[in-house]
Image (cartoon, rainbow, N blue to C red; front, side, top):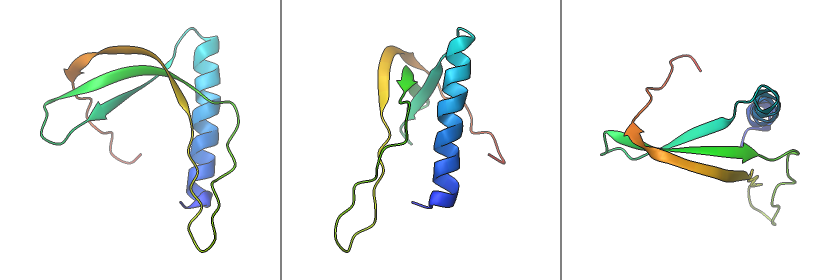
Length: 85
């Protein structure tokens, strides 16, 4: 985990999710498998605060963020990755 990259990305996710919810929109993601043409689409809500990482002696810190699944949508064609993001 590179905190210089991951912390700003998580903050942006939380802020974008908050703005989207205020506009009547939501956060969605797709679960993809390499050998499948389609992906599973899910609508979720993000957390509100960045959690304290799990810390153990002589190990890397691990930070898990929570997504509450609101609705499973469908198995549909994958959305292509946008380059440069």
